[in-house]
Amino acid sequence: MTTSTLNLATSSLSLDQLKVGESGFVGKINQLTSAIAHHDPHLARRLMEIGFIPGEPLQVLHKGFFGGEPIAVRIGHSTFALRRFEAALISVITHIEK
Image (cartoon, rainbow, N blue to C red; front, side, top):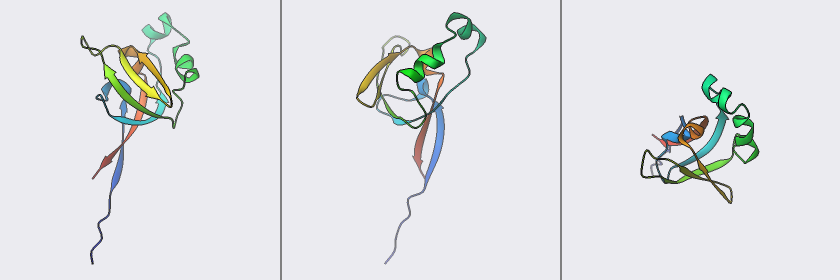
């Protein structure tokens, strides 16, 4: 009798790089660039307040037609629409089968 072993590796992408239907877990909120920080210095805190906290499962539900914006993301039982630059700040941990 033989047994097969499933090898899993983790990969980290920014949320804006995920395709529709892909899922993962929030890794962290990345540092704001100076341009974003000048425009909205509280963005990282607000993203965490609405549920983008490390370890939370998420799934990309939809991307807009023109430029892929907004990006509809489900976290728990809530759905949020994010602009591409907001999604780019969120690191997502995904599992890849080897």
